Image (cartoon, rainbow, N blue to C red):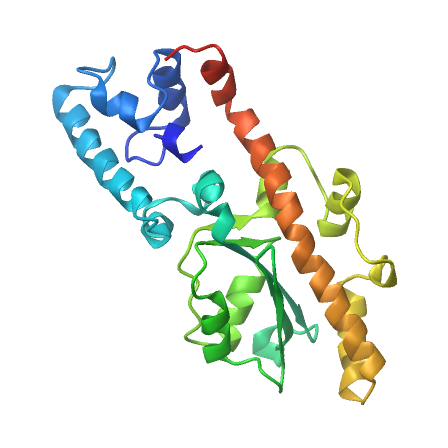
Length: 260
């Protein structure tokens, strides 16, 4: 999808982007190769040519951080097809309080499609370990993480780095008509979780941590299973929501019709 995207350029909105598509300008290469584009003066065309050439170079180099800096977060999903193979899903559990009122992260889970890693308070959950766990990935996937998980961790762990594109599935789901939380979305999309933690929610995770703090190994293990399922299911949902978002742009009707 990123190769079809022009609306992240200053002065180009989604309406003008669709006009490009209708005229056969479907990709960055199409734009650059065109001698002129209706609605753009020669100076603007030349400026956008230079910008797209630079963006294409960063994309070819796999420079995800460049796009995290230059694209609005609401458009980061468009990078999933390119960087999704090097994505990490993140989900946190907390003690139920905000950081300013004594809140802290109890568990941070990360899943990359192969391995699930968990960082636990008072065991291995530190700023250095968080940065180490996040390093090497080119896309962050969360559910409501832009509003909760990421700022929460930044408050609790000054110095933690979130500098890669962020595909927040909560806001993606809303854009394609889904409402509700992660568990409801899983049910609607046919994504299952381990039976032992079906029906548990964030408040249950808080209670499990409290029991674990008082010495219950069973509660600790169940909390980790709960976090693991939250984290792993994000990857399946990411692919599904990406496809729905791409369809919602209308680009496929132009590509399928062979307008270019």
